[in-house]
Image (cartoon, rainbow, N blue to C red; front, side, top):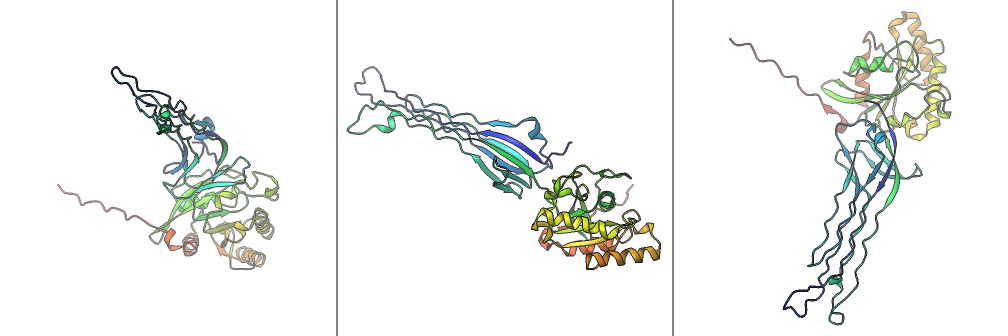
Length: 345
């Protein structure tokens, strides 16, 4: 399945059915009176966050969602049928923006959350509604209310607890593959990750979700490389894991590049807790490892952890630190593995 996190959608609610002008006319009934019914209500357009979706690819092939209009009223005091509503099924974490791509209409962050995007028009009154003692034979009826037509944008921001940051080939995908069942593409060239990946990580009988986004490079905020368009997927994370390649000759510069791009993106990411980890330490001897840690600690001004995703060295310690930075209500208990029943003849 292809990944799509931004889509343009055209929606229109249905108009209400018109009221009916009718009179009861039966044999031997001298004064039948008005009996025109009201029109039915037009269909509305809703958006609902559903389970089982992690991309907006469905909206690439269908961009128009038009609800039907209500049925007009009929004689014999019959009201027109209401039109069915249309529901846009979107992944959890979808933001709905107005046509200007800035005004947020709704943010669907919970499963089952619904929001009405365009309300269907009300049906018009039939002439039965206007009957009175002074107007016993009204010959007027209201037309149905028109529907609402608008253009909206859907922007997906994945729901994750931990976000991975780093330059291309810093080892983010390797870390995700080593700690979860996710299988992101891993290769020895930059930008092997072209779209975000999610993985469920377990440690100490609890689970949390980790998001891997494409690597950032110098000038990403200005559109270089893949740009910073994927940083929105880590906005909802509780903690950021910043991986720095320990085999690089410019460790301090690599660290500062990511910090600069985060600050250029906005205060949303800059204010989040960040764990700095020196990765690929299995490729360094003790002396080189100590020098790399000292250089990174001086650049970051804080504590730096050492880890190797390939050799699994230091990975449990990093996972426990990440777990401690996630609110307890967001952690999920790891399901116990069912023990196989003993064999019986």
